[in-house]
Amino acid sequence: MTKSPFFLYLIGFVLLLQTTAFSQLKYLKANTQVPAHPRIMLLKGEEKGIQNNIASDKNWATIHQTILAESDKIIGLPPLERIQIGRRLLDKSREALRRIFMLSYAYRITRDQKYLNRAETELLKVSTFSDWNPSHFLDVGEMTMAVAIGYDWLYNDLQKSSLPIIKEAILKKGIEPSLDSKYNSWLAASHNWNQVCNAGMTYGALAIYEDNPTLAKQIIDRAIESIKLPMEDYNPEGAYPEGYGYWGYGTSFNVLFLSAVQKALGSDFGLSNGRGFLNTAAYYQHMVGTSGKTFNYSDAGSGSGGVSPAVFWFANRTQSPSLLFGAKNILEKGASNMGRDRILPAAMIWGNGIKFEKVTAPKALLWSGQGKNPVAMMRSSWTDLFAIYVGLKAGSPAVNHAHMDIGSFVMDALGERWSMDLGMQDYESLESKGVKLWDKGQNAQRWEVYRYNNMAHSTLTFNNELQRVDGYASITNFTNKPTFLSATTDMSAVYKNAVSSAKRGVAIVDQKYVVVKDEITTGEKESTVKWAMMTPAKVRITEDGTAELTQNGKKLQIKVLEPANVTLKTWSAQPTHDYDAPNTGTALVGFEVTLPANSTNILNVLLIPDGIMVSKETKIPSLSDWKK
Image (cartoon, rainbow, N blue to C red; front, side, top):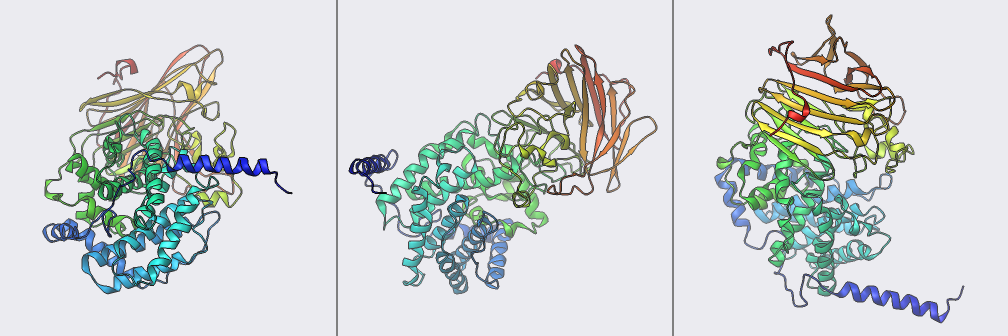
């Protein structure tokens, strides 16, 4: 169909408006200059500081040797191929970033030609991919960052014939698709996509800055404005809405972005001074329990904590060496999987000047933060491997990557995890079977996935109903006394169809045992409440109605103080849908009680590690008396 002259004029006018608006710079200036290559994160000559660290500290030497060992392994691998899994090329992009970052680092520190040669092979290979899968733009973000680091860091030593091929790929397969509205909705997002994609585009822009200065400045300027959205989500105290796993993703790329613009442009434009952002490394640190396992709420894996390069940036930026206490312990024990971290070389840059001998245990035993997904974590000690740890989850199922886990808790003692979270299920395993995983409505199929609803979490369920997606729970109070570490939350909004009020508190009492206390007020109808705890332990119900949990030769007792005469029971944690992942070796333990209409009810449950005696006459104060 032939388009009218007016229609063509209108389209041209709209495009002109978009181009004009995009060309206006808010943060950079028309004459903004950047250093010569290498300019991303590590300038020419700054290798010396890293080499000094390696020579003076065995922990830095351990990280360095890990990178070299991984680089040697990479040399023996076949180059990456463009093999897409479902709608994602992401695993290839991530592996490209790991390979190219490590090889480029290895070459810059050792000047060994073998690392340069293999990095160049990888750069040329991915540059000839048909595209970097812009329909799932995370793939483009990470691939662009990978190629940009290799191009910038190795610029002066790559074959001259390779440079235009790599540069063209950064521009055509990385930056230009980010200008297409079909692919750049992440610019208006407040979650990890924004952080990852803006970081990747900024690295690409910095890498080819001298060839496309106008476009590069526009891309960087756009990123500085856009990335404010996810950085606002750290307010007020630093809790990251998407949980531990996505903190390691979104926050790491956010720091990669800040580090790059600070180094290349001499400023991070005030972005890191937000109320919550500089506090978020403490949140991340407290998310690892005394068992070594993480508080893996939302779409997080169920593994142990590791060495996060981003924490080195926070430790340096805030002059808080104690943030590296966990990393120091891991390094001294030997971190076998550290080489899988695709941004590990960044730790060597961000930690420059930090002495591990000055890294001591944190002083705070409790951390609490509000925000979109409020949480509280507490422990009886940082140095006692058998210490107690509890994490309490509030928030809302409506948050990105959230589960129906409001009121859920994890609990460690005696070096073991007793109350657990099953964590995420691999997305492709669900998407490949047609599960509509990303719908967040109250009746969405997402909540039929076993691991995602409240029936599979250590929380309450009323009348076998789902928690309310539109509900929200804050951390209403916390106490930071060594003899009574506690936090409370008001969960009423997520149970509004079942009861009038539902409040929960968890506490570590006298550094010896844990209490989980619920105060529930019913409405005009009776309601049946199920108190449940997900556990990896073997459960034995004793003659007096309590539960004895056993794992690895250690024991924990669950005792119900209120209601009286309740007998604990177990339920299977095995799902019924063929798309659900199996939950081998886990079970739910708890009880069910029918609550009369228009009544106020107390549930008092004690979690008592083996060897601790708690009197039957123990009185737990009402939640209103759990005060600072």
